[in-house]
Length: 240
Image: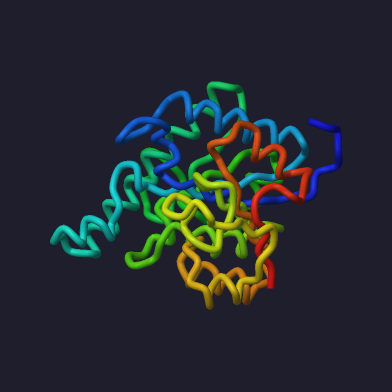
């Protein structure tokens, strides 16, 4: 990678739980965790402060459990606990590579991680630690996408990076339509009006109303996260 000044000083990366599965049908692929941890460390070494919000869809998804007949609130809390498991896995991978990392949870689990407190999270960032935020917002009916938007705004991140399994935002599902076209740039209002499945509407509105830029990129391609720190053309940029 070219030695170029990074575009940002503080970022929030939203990782889906499904991305951690790699080629597995369920759970966590250790090789994927290690690759993601390595890329996060490379980004940190650029002098960038990093916060990560992780989903839990590789283990449990509250809405899916509710669809199967489980109480929605119970399902959502189970999903929150799944995100804690994923966060601990990422922390372990980072620490095995001698990087400092802290897991902070929106629900109290003192035996395994810290409570999320905004000022403490910012202090960890200032000390060069990678902060991994788990348990979403701590409330049922809110997705981890909404948690990512909320936390990015709270900690003063300059951009929200949404890691997906496609190259960016398309005008229609690229897996179902071979003629789908990717956007290099798009507005939040168009994402909402065209009902493009990027993040849930609450997350998009929070980004728009708080002038928080969003970048959607492909996590499956090695070094994409690192490249996105210095090249504006990676993935799709979403702005007001």
